[in-house]
Image (cartoon, rainbow, N blue to C red; front, side, top):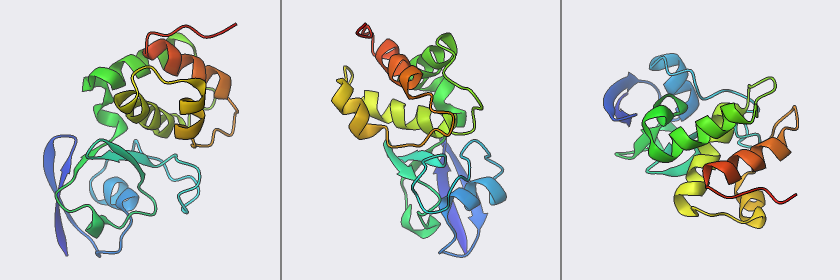
Length: 154
């Protein structure tokens, strides 16, 4: 079945089964490889994308559920005002270690800052449920604070 998807501001068409996860539609049918496969059950967050600005785990989201929603992937973050700040903070603070989970982490952090421009530590804990195998959580928190213009507490 053909699906017209609004991905990063462009209408793209994918001919896939309606139950195909959005992740595989993006990666295999559309060639958008920023969202990563991690667990396949929506637990790790490596596949996080935005649909209408909200973070979603694309590995468990059937493509048929997207409808006319605007899909944004890590590939578009350099053009997103908040995403650009988040990416700059990530690089400035050397957040990535292996880097595999970082596209999903950046997508989650960008959505958090869009909703709460000055998040508290509790806000960050609640929103950042993505898993980082390298455990760079302290640097992730610091980068979110930096991108929001806040200072980390000593």
